[in-house]
Length: 280
Image (cartoon, rainbow, N blue to C red; front, side, top):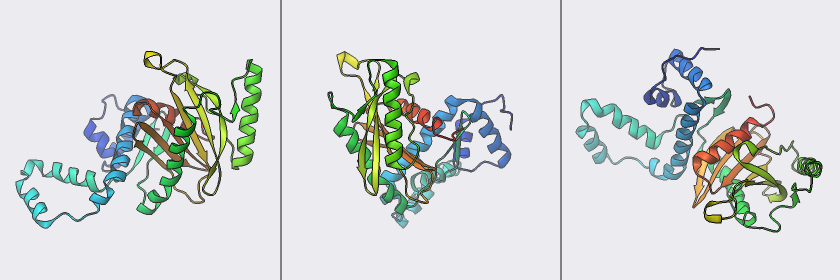
């Protein structure tokens, strides 16, 4: 294992590492630094999530050819010292070369997806957003199986029942994630329909009320079994006030949704990632 340097890498080095542009020795140094500095690793993950979101939004424009006259004007006006900057900006707008993002010992491999794969991933993420919008406002029946029992023993019994039930119906081990360290408690869960079979929604509620006496914030985790051969993906989307981080990895696809700042939702998504079976 590489020993991290005592000198923090510059933003330029971090960006070059993310784009796979560093020589191996320098890339190894950056990876070692990020493995021991989770704050910097989280910042790099945000850059990658922003890049993926921009790619999804701007793909139609990025795929259009640059008019010859415009390209010629740009290159003629760019001073020699700024040419690299222009090339970097053009690459950032049109091509997002992805590498690995390492943080706290976990590997976040953010892959560039082909347009067909991106189109295939969108519908279930949209279903996660719709399910969130439908059930989060419910006060009396927000979940199908509640884990808010009268005692700790009843809570554990209901959690065991919920996990077993969803595992049986979804066809993969369902983990009830513990987000209490981040201020959210499990409310319960429900079974939902998906395009090719069942899916599920877990609901969490903030321990503290919202600002000005508003109801506590809620986040949901939408779970489904991914299609055979689905590639690893970890991306960020924003739909109005709703933020979503969604992930596809070995045997499970999940989307974390909530009306929270992106940075706060990323902390929850990272915690869920670390709690997946086999996560490092």
